Image (cartoon, rainbow over all chains, first blue to last red; front, side):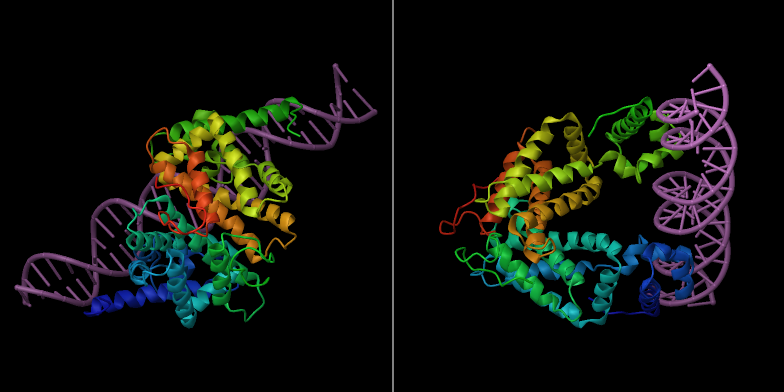
Length: 210
Length: 210
DNA sequence: CGAAACCTTGCAGCCGCTGCAAAGATATTG
DNA sequence: CAATATCTTTGCAGCGGCTGCAAGGTTTCG
């Protein structure tokens, strides 16, 4: 699937990577809008025109997304034990996925980037839209409902909202905070029907305040 | 507050309206990207440069947002009876707000527009971001929590997700469907902790399938 | 080796969007 | 009313994102 054969394909991956790397480096500590495509290309040693053969927009070079991940997410959600509720299945899959991602330098860089450049959150949200569709597909398979059923789409949307909110909170949190924990808290809230914290009566009380 | 005095202010509102109207009319039945600012201005009888004195982007002319609404939403959520959970308070406020909006021609046009031009959903989401902040502020006042508390932000985010999902579903639903009902269903799901529908054991079972 | 497929690149061009400064319209003041 | 201050519109010039096209170089394959 990800086997590279031929010199051409190899070079393609290399330039793509060079562009992405150049973009990330240039944006560090600067307003992303002030970084021009021309600049990125100069650093990557490639013509400006070529940039758009690889990415449809500047932001895509900063935060890209692989359709394979979507397929994986869909499958992983669908394959979780049937005893779990859809929300729990998503929580399990995304929880470990995020933990994995945090182990990869690329994603750490990206999250740090988002942290220092809130303007990029828009792009992040766009990417999450893709994840949302993948989640919905997984929930649909799991429940047998249509993938455009209100419940299915809402579950996916709310889960993405949980991730997004957790990451946002992590953005404002002190250094060294573990994002996985925030994500877990967020899902706990969702599961409790968004009952306010601190109350003693209502269901599985989510953890104390952050 | 919205009193217009002076001929100048009146003319300003008029041109703003003309631009907005022109944009909406031109986009009907066409790819919004193919409608140029120049075209819009020609129809509104105004110079292209002037357009950007009113709107920061093309899409802003199609779907704009008033900061007053945000303030209203915040206040309305904060003032709901203390016996209601935050989610219920939001549900009440947004439910009637959306119902009101559906009574206004402008918003009916916009929603129909979104329905036929999915590309505009992005803009709609951006606008909802503003609502989300307003909701969070309301919930914060209501609960006494900080407005960047995870619970507060998540509740706002999930509520917006509910609205967005409901509108999305309405987009695909047959003509004449009542959006208010979809919104209500969506909130019911949230309140139930996103328990899957159809089960007989789990809490306040949300309404049957759509 | 030669043909076919593929990549890169430059070019020309549209469009969104912005700053600036001149000119016009409107409000204000004496 | 007249003079002046204030606000709006407009044209101009320009940057930067993004695209289609066609030329030229490189890799692949028979």
